[in-house]
Amino acid sequence: MNMKAIWLIVCFSFTTAVFAESNESLLLKLSVACQNAQAEFERVGANTAISPDFVTEYIETINASLDALVASGYLNQAEYNMKNPSEMTEKELDNLSDVLLGFVDKLYKQYGYYSALEMVDMGVYRRISTVRKGDKFSLKVRIPEKYAKELGKAIQPFLQSKPKKKNTPNT
Image 1: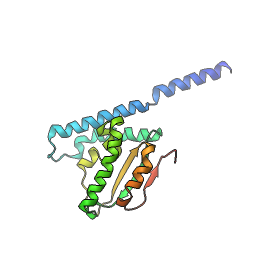
Image 2: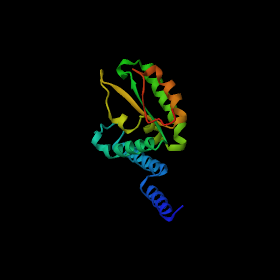
Image 3: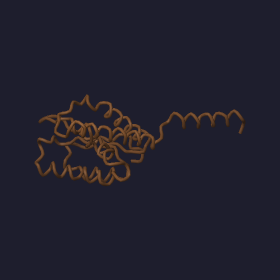
Image 4: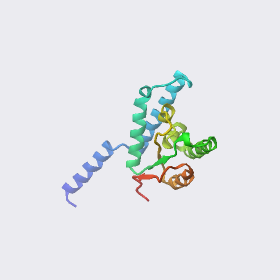
């Protein structure tokens, strides 16, 4: 191999290492943004109406981190078009909550509780958004591949239509 080729490989490797954020770095950013957003809720009080502008910075960081983890292949993403909550019985809403929190239980020891909530789309944005009767309601789930099929099956009873899969490199 000639020196020019070796130099190009070294430069490319260095550039990739410097400019590409590692998954660990992205997970740290995600965790910090999730914790800070939750702290804002605790600071102002759980029963206070919060404007989405109040946590926009955190929501943007959370979504950018999760999207980058999907782009890198670390997480899989699926968007589920759900029945509108106003069309579900109280029992169905409880069951949906149990399903999603069951996946939070599987994820939180590795990723942190608030990050796991965001991964199953039950985090900050859900706390400040309102779904009115007739509105479309979807969950954008970004979780490790080993849980994707299991969640897909568990969430079936609550779907309006089939999920739209995005960037799932191994399926």
